[in-house]
Length: 302
Image (tube, rainbow, N blue to C red; front, side):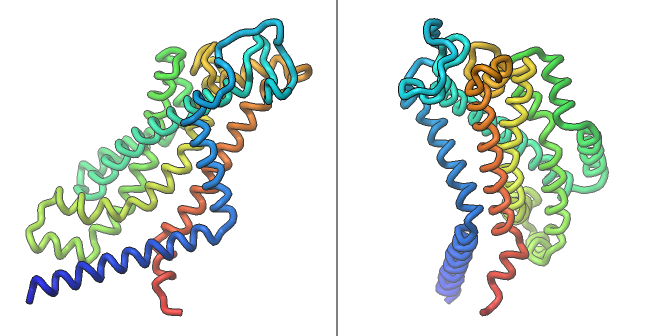
């Protein structure tokens, strides 16, 4: 009898999750801005993955006889000051920028979530110590702190990644801690404690799933800001070094030719703007559908 009841409960739980997922997806795709953000991100991600395959030229190949050529059928986005195809360099730069953004965001997410979960659940002096570290980190402007770290370590993409990862984890820690503090006082967590469930199991099985939604939203928006930060540091010479086809480096090289060869700087500038715009739209859409109040609204009878 007990086994049959467990089977029924499990089936109902799965059905509830399926219905909730279906309604969440319907709510997401009902907003045209959400669809636009998703389309932009998916398109640019495909370009980043397939860039080296579809790029018509070697991004480092120089052709001085065709330098500073405007957009043509042979070179859809023109050539730069060394005769390199801007479109090919843009595609290779997309893979580089997206790869850095994913790696930096993953480091921020894992580190910040672990610290926030530990601080919120353990509490006491552990919480005080970790949150003071968070306060110290947040007291400095993120980009300025990244600039200092990258300047100390030296100009390279690896150091830029490290600098951006170091300055971005505190937002995740504060967000996760706040969610854990409210969740750990709920009835199902108290019931798990009374049943003798270990602290680690409670944290992993009951607390962590309840912070996934806000963390996903923050990570989605962070992807755009990391790309922007990477390009900014490369623009001033602290990131990728020539001839690496990175968007910030391309923008920096093109600023000297804005009057006569506007396409050199406009192409990477437009790519950065479109990417950040797409991730912001996608993040806003995910925030709307993953917000707990939104879920509660969906479950109300019509």
